[in-house]
Image 1 (cartoon, one colour):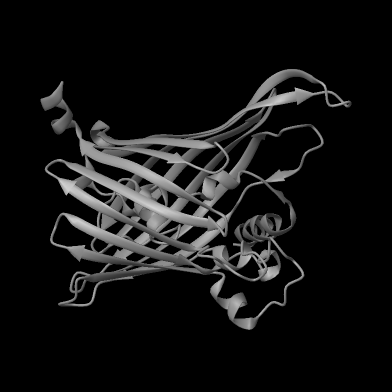
Image 2 (image 1 turned 45 degrees about the vertical axis):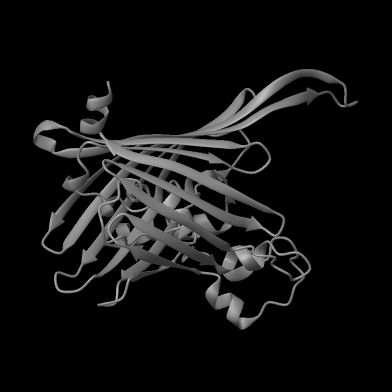
Length: 328
């Protein structure tokens, strides 16, 4: 017990004070999650893409599903993701995917500013997930291999996420929790670098009131960090008590129109406050999107206002192997 407590203490405090890297691990890998405020760990349905955020969301019902996402991020950065679930014999269903980020090509210059070459910057995540249900409770784990490269230098890490979710058998209500990015560096950028991993703990709930076409999601993230890093654009701003509390939360609402259309709206308070300009948000922190099901295909789109001057869009499609066999 003492050894376990010591291990937790070291993981907790090192995540607070070390130079943190691998921030791309916490970006949304789901159009739906992006539209609901940026993170969601308590989805009541078995969404294969949501399984990246909490592996306990996965289930046997997604066997054969294939998910593809394209995310044109800021400043010419492009993110692409593919996820699929397959049967692994006696092990049961496994979910595997790859997330790739391309930052583009840059000029390499000498100390005088003369261009002497070109280089690229890229990130990747390979992940495989498994879940297991025990009545209304589901436990899940994601194993991830992540890499970040700039020109000829790079860092690699082996990580895993532990998640759990409770789905009420009597009401449309669920509670989820995930411990993200536990692991260690395999190699760092340089011998002198001390890069830490973006360890995080998230807790959320999703509920749908009876006889209402709305589903609500509330997610708390960054629970192992203080409010000191709240203000990014202007660290000299007065920190209000309300901001200190709500910087941990993002809120999402889904309007369900039949069984094939879902309209999503999200709000991320930390995004709004951290990236405003002259204390004016201009929509920063707001997100919206939709989900449209046409036969065996599900199309998703979301738009997330990241900064007062910038937004990014997520485009994705989900189908299954049976539908693809009919095409090919």
